[in-house]
Each structure stands twice: as C-alpha cells, then as structure tokens.
Image 1 (tube, one colour):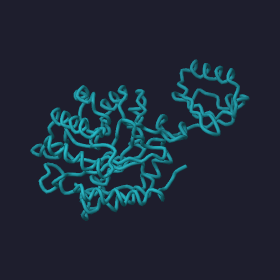
Image 2 (cartoon, rainbow, N blue to C red):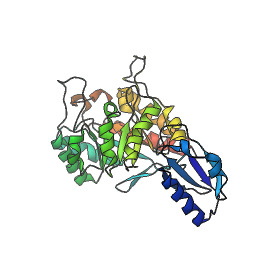
Image 3 (cartoon, rainbow, N blue to C red):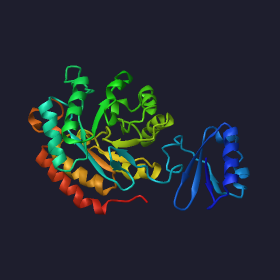
Image 4 (cartoon, helix red, strand yellow):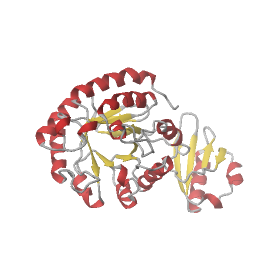
Length: 337
C-alpha cells in the first residue's frame, strides 16, 4: 500500500500516522520527492481500512499495490536509486561501464587488461575468480587467488573490482571486493540472497537464463528485505528458441520495463547475451539508446588464448571503439522520468 501525503503535511499528524502503522504490525518507509512525500506500507495491509487513511487531513491519496515486490517497486520509491561504488555513481542519470576478462588467469593478464580498459574509459574492473561452468572439466577459476590478483590490479589502477560469488561460504573472501556479482545461475539461490541482504556491499544481480522480469525483481527483493538496498539489476540475455549465431537472446525491452516497475539501476551484459564479439558493439549502442544505466563488457588482452569465453571477448582496441560509440549515443538515450 502507498500513502501519498499532501504537501507540507503537519509533522505531528504524520508522526501519529506512522505510530499507528507500526502498532498495526506494518513497516512504513517514507520517500520524499520534489512534489510529494510517500509512505510505503509493507506487510499484511489487508487489515488496513483504506478509506480511514484516505480521510486524514494530511493524506492526498491511498493506493493498494498488487505487485509482490515492495522495496524494489517504483511506486514505493519514485526517485531513481543511485548506487555509489568508490565515488562512481550508477543510476539517476549516471552511467558507468564495467569491463575486464571473463576469468582471472594470471597477475600479468588481469593487470594488463585493467590498465587497458581504464585507459579506454571503463569505471570498474570485472574478472571472474569463481567460475560456474556447464562442464565440470572446464576451467573453474582461480578462486581465492583470483580475488587476490583482482585486488592487485585495483591497487595499480584504482579501478573498483566486480566479481561473482557462488556460495555463502565464500563471503569472507569478498571483504575487499567492491561489487559482488550474483550470476544468472544463482539468481534464485535464496539463502545466498538473504546473506547478501545483511551486507553493505553493492550487488550486481543478473537475470536468470529463463527467469521473468518479476522473478528478477523478487530476487532483488530478497536482498533488499535484509537491509541492503544497493542493488543493480543486470539483463544478460535469456534462453529462447532462437539458435542462429547468438548464445542467448538479449531482452532490450527489459530496460524500459524495469525502469517503469523499479527504481533500481539497470546494467546490460551484451557479451554473455550474444556470445559473439562482433555483436557486442551494436548491442551496446542499442542498450545505451534504450536507457541502460551501464554496461558490463568482457575484454581480454588475447581472446584467442582466453581460458574462458574468448569468443565473446573484445580486444582492448575493440573496447575503445565501443566506448566511443556509446559516448556518441548517450545524449540521445531514453529517459524514463
């Protein structure tokens, strides 16, 4: 339920309303906008008399919210959420590009890529330390050692690091990681999401291979309900019937739909969506034009020798070309508000 307050609502009456809401066993969340103040009621609102609240002098309107997600819902939080990572802002008109290799392979490799993507305009460094692979015989990542190498690359370049977690037991290794990524396969690992909700780390939450937009938002709700509201949503392609060339189908429609339904920043991953390096640039352009708040792109210093996903990885030179194209498109990007 959402209670829209009148402008300059009496503070004493508002305090009484908030106390009454708490006595009903509900949580109230106040959001102050430019033109109005909103109280979002979370809990079993079926016992609330909507006419009783609507009759109060300080109340402009009352609406029942049908969607099962509340904290991620734009109706509760009309203003865009801005997630800040090491001084870098994402969302609310702020745009950032995350770039780096699919997996960390050596100190020389990750440091060379970090320096290259920073020089081309990347704001953060991505790199997989723990790698979920379809085959148990494929390279699984350098695990804890990979995180240490990411930290080394950060110390040399200053780029905040983004890497994927696989299991709750790994959380202590992520103390110095700037953004924790939840991969598509773990989007509905609810125990992991709950644990991440009790951290203060920004979370990059990827959409599952066959998950709906509502399911993605419900997964974000799991994190946010624990108290961590620094969540970024990532569209990385979904599995459809299409088999021609692309690894997955990039759902660009998800960008405006997510922006209508949620206040959280939306990041696009064209590398995993297409699975083909030559298709990354046009999808970056399209995603930027559609209003994405950022991109996460795979870049490798020698894609032909990459231990993981070399086919979809850009060279530093190709990444620089993409960055120029994205900057040219940004002034014409779709704005939700």
